[in-house]
Length: 597
Image 1 (cartoon, helix red, strand yellow):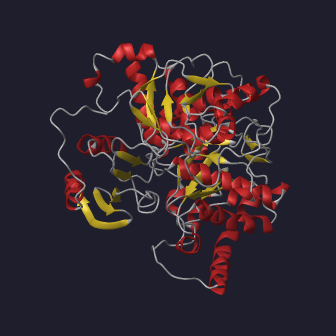
Image 2 (tube, rainbow, N blue to C red; image 1 turned 180 degrees about the horizontal axis):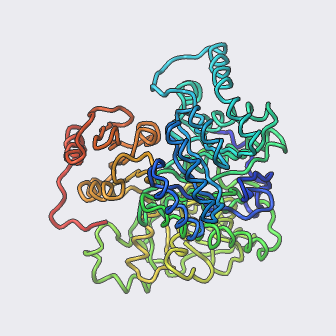
């Protein structure tokens, strides 16, 4: 992917906000894209065969502010019950659009399209049976595979056309077909090309009522995939202006799940990309709605408002970063208060003098959340002030630089501009905000994760400062968790946990908590907790170990993408997971005085 940014662009400017213009796609009564606001979605956790439970959960989601509801339809038999769910909702006066979620079963998609307003297909498994086979495809063999896909996909497109049903062509990182994997690898480019293959078939039939998605559990991969998709759509022409559904899949639960969602989706929303969002938490689905609403209303809108305040800002001569290939901004390594900063060192965590006063006498009780730098103003500059930036660049010695609070730009654009203009010798300290703090813990968390996380995923930043938390301990915890969520500083066990749905074969929430309690001290180990085979060996992508539902009450355990233990009784599975981690020399006993992180 290196160098692709020199030929493609995903937006007109990295330094000015502009909402991406798209065509409108109608999903029942709800319009996505075009002049419509960003729509909020969620997904049922109830068994699709349980009509009453699905109706009740849908009503609760709609009351919470959900505009589009997705339901799994793993087989034709499940899909048949969508007729009764839809009829029951209409009888109660609820006309919220329903989306059928399809994996592996084209016949289930055909049945579902008779009853719902939208069908989601995954190009990686709609026709292909993933076997993790490694083989070379000749151009002729590749073309034969595309013909087979078209034969299976065309009937669904025609049915959707006839009934006015929309579609989501939703690619997931890690669940790409063997054919795509062998030609493009498990990459954002492979994700994009997989979706475009299906889009070309739809367009050949003059069907345009579809949206794209490019989901991944790794925010860096997710951001890069969406940017690359938009760049490819721009390159293909103005009539490829399809709306985008945003989501970080398997984000997890609690603060970590919210942070990871904000990093991935917030970064794209900051650039005007995204027309509908779903926050995927390993919690009851109704808890996803306030997070999605806050991202849309309290995070995305301020970027547009800041653009109206900032005035004329010229484009810098050099690019701040390559948006299609992650690499950390190079700078000199310097010493700040006895700590090495920049030059490839891990990203450091700073506190204000008042925060330091609050915790200085109890740092031994902070565990991993240690303050490393006290930032009392330091060297700060408005990056739009060319004279001030030139003076900084003229200094003989490198120094740690931050954007001044007086800067009228939004945080993301301000730091991009600083990174583009500042001499490469100088490392950069990122702030979670420049203006008044966000009111309320959830919007503040999401704003900090969006600002800091998106910049870190672009390779910008050598230290971070969180100021808009009620306590110093809260600021330190949030700073470290954002670093972990962005994948730039791993200080605890990393979990990839899918949200529950009707396919789930065990209680995801309680099981995830049980696994966390047993393994939370394994710093640097990545564990995936997947409810079923759909979200199993493929979508957990780069996890070290996997805990996957194989059948009701039975668990399969994975090392990477390879299943190594099968049909383990659920009551034994966590202990067997620990045994597996031991076998691979990744286990160590928790310290007696360990602080929970």
